[in-house]
Amino acid sequence: MFDYHMHTSFSADCEVLPEEMVRASIQKGLTEICFTDHVDYDYPDKNFIFDFNQQAYKESITHLQDRFGNEIRVKRGVEIGVQPHLLDTYKKLIQDEEFDFVICSLHTVEKKDLHFGAIFENRTIDEAFDAYFQELLRCIRKFGAYSVLGHVDLIKRYAKKASSHDFHDCLKELFAEIIPRGKGIEINTSGVRYGLPTAMPSIDILKLYKSSGGEILTIGSDAHKPLEVGFDIRKNLQLASDIGFRFVATYDKGDPQFHSIEQLLR
Image 1 (cartoon, rainbow, N blue to C red):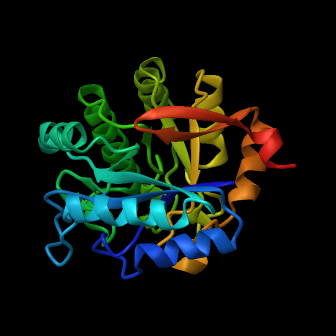
Image 2: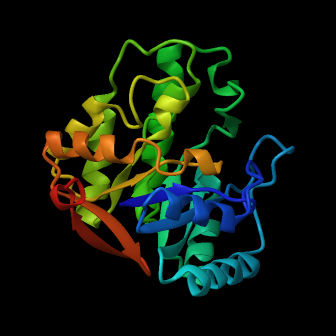
């Protein structure tokens, strides 16, 4: 079983040492994990500097690979927070570092953060959702240095009420961009932990991705604490299988490796 989205003390919003996350992963029976610590340049809340020493990160993961290699596979990934004016900067980071796996996420819209709700000020819920999906689409049309899109409908986590629209038309355009390029999406199981009825994306979006021809799917808990590691992984793999997905992906040096969901669930 795999968990391909987790954070450590290299992320500004986490205080847990990488080794603690590895030990929790082994205890929960995971066979492969990928650290995806945050790089979120120009984040609007200056109390959080989402950047870190890449050499120290690499050395830490290499040490864990050597120490725990007989018990679990540990990969080096990153979660980037894209903004339209930063795409070239991220391209250089990904080219220079050669991560195993890259999650492309949108944590801000029009340089306003989602976390504290700035995106919702002076606009309706529907307008905020539209701005979010349109900015993600604009970024993806100009950027391809990633493996999967992270928590595609993240804005739902911060909205005080649901939008009256499903934005499937915009999502269809998004999937039409990423699928031919061999990019995927993740199932981020943390949605339920944050009060949503499902993981992110919601079931309708997963079905839309599948019907659009999407096949590349990863799964991760978005854990920031050892107790969160592996959260609802099996449950959401079963959901993916019920929708019609046959495989879940892991990554090695940027290349996807496909694993039968049916076999993982046995």
